[in-house]
Amino acid sequence: MSQLSAEDELERVIDAVVGPAGEAYYSDRVRSGSAARVRAQAAQSTITLFAGGLVATLTFTALADRPVITQVSGIVAVSLWMVAAVMYLRAVALPVPALAWGGGVTSRLNLIEMVLEKADQEAAHVDRRQRGANAIAVLALIASAITVALGVLVGPAENSANGTVAVSQSYNNVLQELCGLSGNKVSGRIDISSLNSQFIKVEVSIGHCADGSTTLRIPKSEVTAISMDNDD
Image (cartoon, rainbow, N blue to C red; front, side):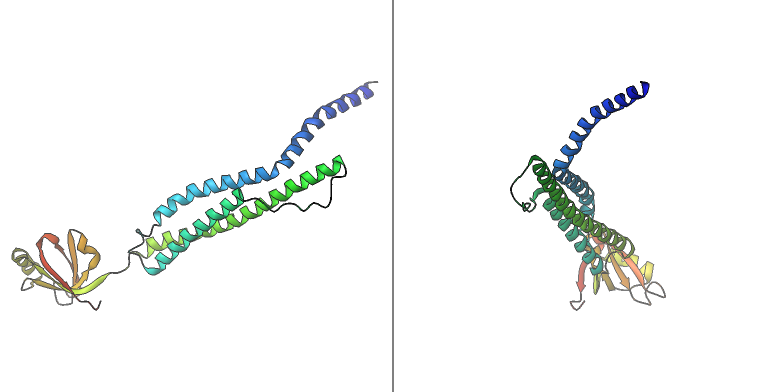
């Protein structure tokens, strides 16, 4: 008798659990397409936040003085982030191709199968689109890492030209004491990027100031004129 009671109790527990469990399972199956879009949207939001900082770091203004290889790497990285964003948007927003029905509904079970098949098809299409977007995002991340590494290791591109800097008479006395230069003109390799700074850098040739080449940093306030060769 106790054995029958235990079996009856087990059956009652199963009956109580199967209903809610089956309802939750099939409800999730029917909404699997929407769930896939939610996953894609969450991935898009995460990538957008993460990529925003990288794109801000890799702006073309920040790379303007970098070598061509660094600039190309930055352009590739930004382009890949844009492609990834478009692909995530495609996964979230665009509809999937309609399911080709094999025929009319013949029974309630057939209707359930068709609804579940349509939901599975939509989820598969969205997940496939998201996998493509994820792959592009990984490539964009790699390109961004390469760009940052090149920016740190390679440094700014050299931007200089041969020319002459004329200085004031008072600063000419300083140059005479410092390097033994006569006259108020300093000829050498002028760092063009330093023209907008407080000190203008001029690399003088061998024989001035030292045995090898020496870089003079001349205060901009002491400079009266600058001439540079057009051939550089």
